[in-house]
Image 1 (cartoon, rainbow over the protein chains, first blue to last red):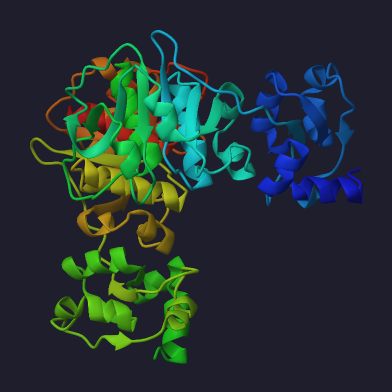
Image 2: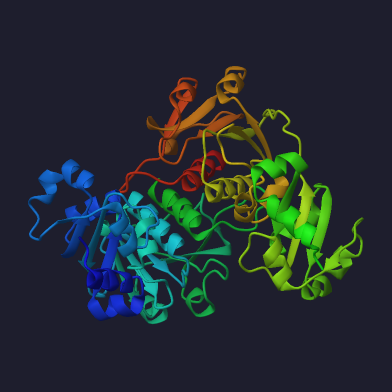
Length: 245
Length: 245
């Protein structure tokens, strides 16, 4: 069973303040927990249903920690999912290490992405297109927010995030800095450099003024209809698809 | 003010059963209501705050119906938004007319899209790429669901949806039927025909077996990383961006 104190502790990790204090975060659901077990994240607690245990006994029996068998109600009481009949883990967060692109590599820069679902989708889309480094403004939503982790569909295990002052970070780079703006070059005609950064702006306000001044290559997704904008996750996917073709 | 009976009526329109019975649906928020007022939808009721009225008096004074000034609390009580300081309208739904592509035209076919946010995003993305006809399986979520309308960000006014039996519909077409499948041709190398249909499958299960058999051109979005899939809205955007380039 999950003890009262454990439930209180796990509940507290839904708040950034306590994630920072304990350097721990929650991972819920079959897909995300299975990806976690394959990753290099350090596990702290693991609760699974009997069904999940039976299905993945080979993986679970090799883990260096005690796996607790619990019921669905306990998982739902401890975690943030309204329905969870599989698993809940607590893992240690990683330190905020600087990330830089290597040769032949791209990274994303997120300027004030506020919605956890959007950040999760961007991480998942980045993973699809082979982008595993994301530099975030301090105002971007926390990577370890349970809604972000859920929306990545497991891609959080393959992607590193670095929270920093974007203007300072960008000024120190020598590769092209691409930014999606309204008045940029059509991405269908853009020849991307071998390495660089792609900035994705805030959902409502786009790229902030200070960061926009540092964009070396303005790009635009051409529109063929009446919609005024695309959401941040969609824009990321379209830009990365053009980068990779 | 919004009367008790009106609140009851508007609340009921959150359910498909009552939308069908009354042939009416709700539109909420500044952006969506403004787009509605510019469209050919027939208005039934319109409630706005004093601020919204003052900002858009020129448009509102020309309407062929009584505009009621109400407060934010009333809008939130009547509608589905937890926060709405602008406007709420009730409009008449359109009949379920057959849609077919013309020359040099594409339409989307949605096979069992269940999530309202996904359908709304697909409509918005379609509108961005100039797609204004969408054919839906009967199991696809209702166009007039308030969450769908909200997620379209106004694009619902420029897009027509037709709910039908997909297998019967597709069998009657002579243009290519593109379907996003795991084993298709790389969309980066696909030469799209001048007109046709693009099928987007269910969020979890993809395109259903019966419909898959009718796909004439299998296409695949190439992956460069670890994510197993892309969501339906993202996949739609990437396919349409490749179609339009």
